[in-house]
Length: 173
Image (cartoon, rainbow, N blue to C red; front, side):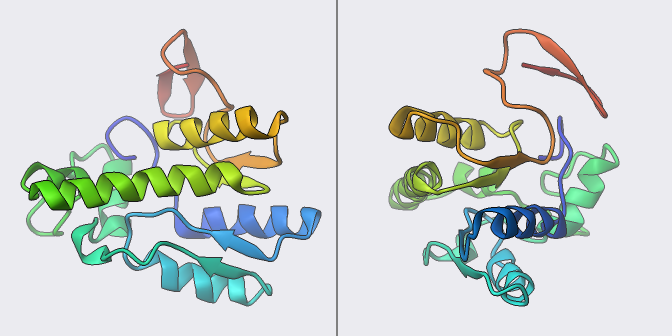
């Protein structure tokens, strides 16, 4: 998120997860994130609703830092890649200078995230995210039906075929 789409707060995801959990009896959430603080925050927030959170146990020190502050800047239209005074450093920045083994580990982590998200009983995310769309499409191909979902930004789309109007302008959908 940030340069061409809105960055949502963790509370927005939490609220949608609580909504789906209440409606469909869900008691476990898988969190796919590059924010090292998100797992603890969501565990605390959803725990208050009796919902457990699980996530990969990969080294989160490699991943994004200061994502909330960086997202707020990005939502204001400020390019956040390597903003020194805030310490914005998205995973894309770190991958540029990572070793081959780190790149492989992170790529495998994304494959695991997509696979688990596809197998889940419900989905909360943003469909401006390519990862979210791939996981959702894979889920449909495996299950043969559309599972319950909440997209925080746009309706599901193939992306790239036509322009749709969104609150922040247009998006190729």
